[in-house]
Length: 254
Ligand code: ZN
Image (cartoon, rainbow, N blue to C red):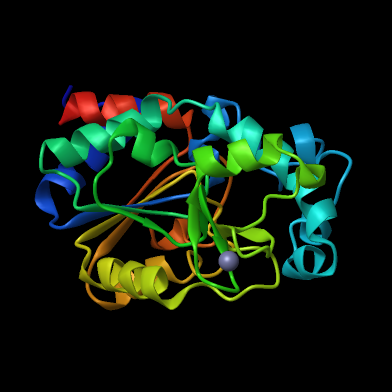
């Protein structure tokens, strides 16, 4: 296809970058899970966030002030997310890892879809719904256990054996990011020969900083995201099509 321009040429250019760079690290955001039926709450009028302000209901102060009320909202989110399946974009990244072309996935998403797709080396910088913890005694409960507790008595408030309410192991608004995954994300970004940013507007800390970390250490940045990002000018390749189509085309081109 010598001399062709357009979407196919962009995918070919990205494939060339992936082949030539090591290690390749993916950085994913809400956009990769939209084809799985998980709306990006930053898009107005999307699904379950329509009638609430997530920055109020999913705030650590809301959990502290009234854990039962917090869980009455959050239980629905657990239920909704727990049933979702990974899509072709998650699967393409898992395939690239199996083929030795991708070293790690860093994600902002809490939906467990990279795990379900089979990604092994995964950094979930905002935690995930896979578990909930007791902040009092440190006991940890799996998603299945929490769903079971939610079905039980006590007004739907999942509580630890010690009596304290559980908190999902996700970073709520108003909370600091846990240092361990953040440190791992920084190391992967700084070591990356190519940071492949997928489905993220790259606006939220820490992912907003990670492309700069890669570039400062001599790596390249590629972006597969609909809509503009602050890093478009510095990206070696920018693909703006449907995230599933683009990543499946990439996997096929490699
Ligand atoms: Zn406890």
